[in-house]
Length: 407
Image 1 (cartoon, rainbow, N blue to C red):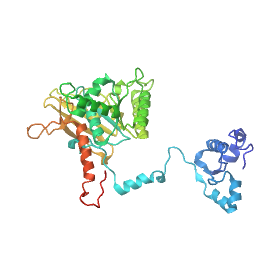
Image 2 (image 1 turned 90 degrees about the vertical axis):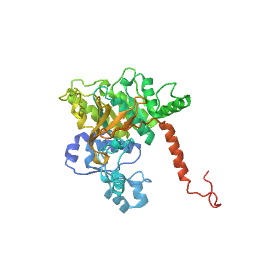
Image 3 (image 1 turned 45 degrees about the vertical axis):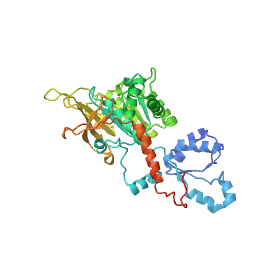
Image 4 (image 1 turned 180 degrees about the horizontal axis):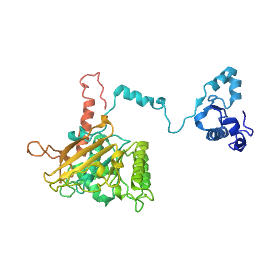
């Protein structure tokens, strides 16, 4: 069949015939010109007929239409164009061939563990990767935000991950930045302990690696994600921290809370997957559980205020709990969705009030002196990079004239 008015996207003439001529057809071949008007006609035909039963006939890069292909290559070649017509690619539907390279890489190398923060006790339980949603919870004053900062600082040092924060509870921004500076330098944020040179260097590092989303009035999740998307494109952030959930402006409307939270978590997960970032969401528990002695117990991920979907839809779920009596911090890994990335378990830390860092702790071990980490991580990073650079050239013997200096 031929359209009666050329390559025109106005298909009103089709209205009277689509039921009698086309509704009972299993396959419809669309063969149109490849110029702008032809493409417009093609798209409108696909919309009217439905892409699931259409095949597209193409004539090759050097041919605009069937007649041009016939003149250049002959009848048999034109028939082959019809025989090799392709199904229309449906948005959101994939075949193995669409991700074959990724599948082959998994086959050759296996499922790989994600990135780790460098604390052996937690690394054994949990490794992180982008395109995931990580939920963190804990009772007030348990150190949830501090531990999120610990994760951020160490992933930045170890892998160069850049972070964006929406963290109203850490306002003003200078306060939050001062805490990050302590974690990087290992020193208390003070003129008496931090030299101007170190201070200048760490400020420059934060300028290039940490970004803060702080709208003056619009705390809606879409606004936060729009600004985070800008930072993905312009700065290459690998993680977005939202701390806490209840500071996002509610758009629940007439929906019940469970449905609203489910849709919001889906939106965060979709953002993580589309933009190849990890989203870390801190959420408060609904109530504080006490044991028979009246002491606060570590909450579960199902205790988060609002909905069990916080547990159901998380890729990672972490509970930070401070043991007041023993003066250490428990980190409970409650969920790791994919087994190659980790498993459930608990590990223990001591918190350094001097610089906000955590060091692994064994509550059942000896009462030996705790070895605190007060080193400047930025300086350590530079030294390690220099060492690696030296190792690259250690095989050269410069006494041998055959060797050329790489510099």
